[in-house]
Length: 382
Ligand SMILES: Cc1cc2nc3c(=O)[nH]c(=O)nc-3n(C[C@H](O)[C@H](O)[C@H](O)COP(=O)(O)OP(=O)(O)OC[C@H]3O[C@@H](n4cnc5c(N)ncnc54)[C@H](O)[C@@H]3O)c2cc1C
Image (cartoon, rainbow, N blue to C red; front, side):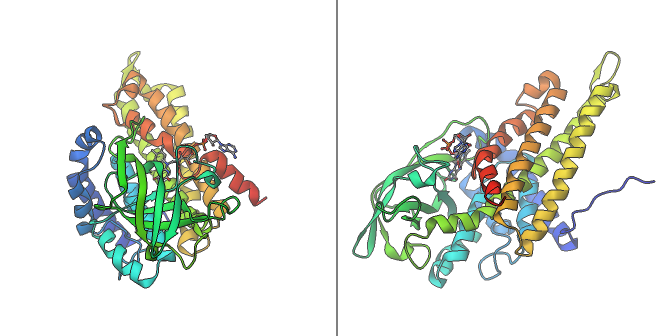
């Protein structure tokens, strides 16, 4: 029987066309610049506006704000970036836009979303602080009402797109006396030339060097109360919990794409590389290891596709999104590590894509809620 080629059930001709456009754009505009972005620790500003012109930013937002697609379009962009080995914060940008879409009033949406879709305004989401990551109840940044303004003080760390960000979804305590996470609100900060707003250094990381991951500092920063997201204060934690499935599923998409890529490039490598007078693939252990990787990647793909289909239908619950983020990134970790091993010493050289995949993917088990926190979320559903 001929080998069966699996096709994701959510793919169609229109998405194939979109994939071609994204692939060509990423290959011509991003890939040649990526090494330089890694050195400067951020993409060029024009990368954002060019991405906007090509229609790859906010591809799933309604047409009045974005490209009018579905999560499938977002998935195609994430997959193409992952397969090209390009680290670009368009997914975090999308996450911020989704907060605005879900909780913003019409004026806020009109004000920010079209500029974000054009790449003129880059989005960042700032929750994590030096002393509060997994435990968001511990955040210390405060917003105090002063007439029609909030006066914001505090700091954030590990903020993706931090250098480029023109709009920051900032998690702050509007009621520091409220218990636990009850006093948290999300306030949208338009950061350009804003007194009291300071971007710190780009953090030195194990991987994802092309991304600007920064510290942010707020010193008596005055933000209009009209920039509060949602109708009332104190809704921030609920908003974050509601939006995290989008972020967690997106990470699952990147994880599967990276795992599939790792299997493909390693298969090619072991066919070409010789040892003891034969191709590496001719050793049974190499075949078995790659057979395990290919099987796991395929299981991941089928589960992911099921989650994507459910998400598009509005049926992906928080626990299943957490399962996707946890299991798919663990699976990716196992596969990429094994594929690196099969490259021998070259797998440890950052001149080889497998080494960069290994370093770039490691964080996926940590951010957007660590995988231990994912297991807690899944545990709540038991
Ligand atoms: C490259 C990168 C980009 C990032 N981008 C962003 C961003 O754009 N915006 C943003 O807000 N944040 C961002 N983060 C921060 C990220 O979300 C946090 O690092 C993550 O949530 C973990 O928090 P922490 O680092 O404080 O670790 P901690 O919370 O201190 O956790 C340390 C360890 O303890 C474990 N642990 C903690 N609590 C529990 C528990 N209850 N049960 C079991 N184990 C537990 C964790 O799983 C982890 O293994 C980014 C981080 C990185 C590295």
